[in-house]
Image (cartoon, rainbow, N blue to C red; front, side, top):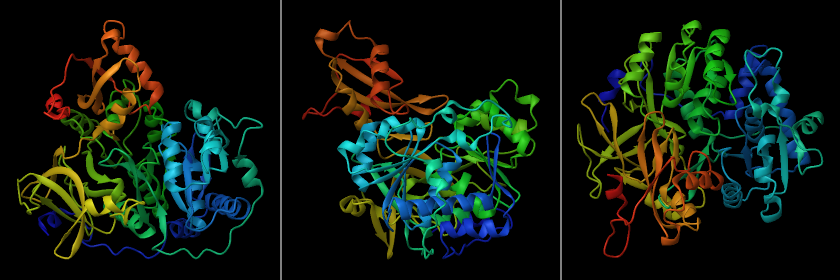
Length: 547
């Protein structure tokens, strides 16, 4: 284990971190005791104190336990966009020691069917605008109970600093399957005494794996706490910090850095359901936001706002994120505008967000950062697993307190994705990196074929499988393509059946794709080919096409 990076830890921050044995739910309880009247959530004109949030968590937990009969260790689907109900639902599920399964709201019905089956889900907390995607699963899956949330119930248009997003105006259809959030909360039920443990499984975020099928990453309270408390110290999240929460909360980075860590600290969350650069800028000015963790595409758009100079954003103290490298020109623009360096980090669903983060007072641009608290990060030679040193390129493997306990019901893949080194179990990230002489890590390439589109990971095989459903498609090969805003985007190379040549257009295929898969997955670029390079056995040489 190298220790070069310890010299560059943030100023006045200890080199080690003892992870508390308390639970994620305990964090909310302690914060509510310390700061009962402090604003926890600002949501489009609606303001909610920590005391109010905790009270609603208790009532929802009571309803889940007593009326819906959700059991301890039962997996519960959380399918919502950013909203107070997402956070209340998240903590309520943990309150009864059940397990949160947060899923991307852009998922299709077929995607959701997979998650429901894979996790044996019977109960789902769902945003009203997503109802149509999941209601049909009641007939084909074991899903039996829906709790429907209308985000607008927690907003106040008369006090909002801007127009409410359309998602806040959706409500549950009368007579439709499921119980409304209001109905559940009106019962004011209370759950049994809380006896949660640090080792309880808390959340199962999903990621795409080497087979192309999504895999659930099992995290306990303790693995999540490692990064909640780590982010709190690393990013100096005090009780008087104000976090602009624009990253989606179903994603581990948004959840940890923009919600769970601020709640641990007792700070205020300014919550956005949909990205809106004008609203974000006004929110920074109105609420004096100090912390903003994002992805580069958001920052690029934020700085491109022609009216940004009219808004006071001087309250910002830390701006950073991950998911996609920030272009150097944008980093310079941020510094010229705010005097702040962009603080990049690196992490995975398997590590509940970051394993590496740049020190806020000494960051390097387009850099993964240095290993965080207790993280043993090593670089191995692909193929031989020989440990490499400074400047050498190899696969990143990690061991640390935030690493998941394993993939849900994927024993074979658990074995394949881990390696033992000197008696310690390391997770193979599948990413090729290099380390400089100061212990900072840099991404070189992806060992896997994954496409990273604006922070969302897309598995080409999955997209290809869907493209093959189109009658005109004879062969398809999906590759990543550089994109100025998204970092990478999805490109599909297509060989058409003879009878469709000259008749099927690129735009038609793109429009069709939009209807077949989540928005972040569908090809943005299509190129027609007459043939593909292949191996002797007929396998398409995708690397050659990629290059």
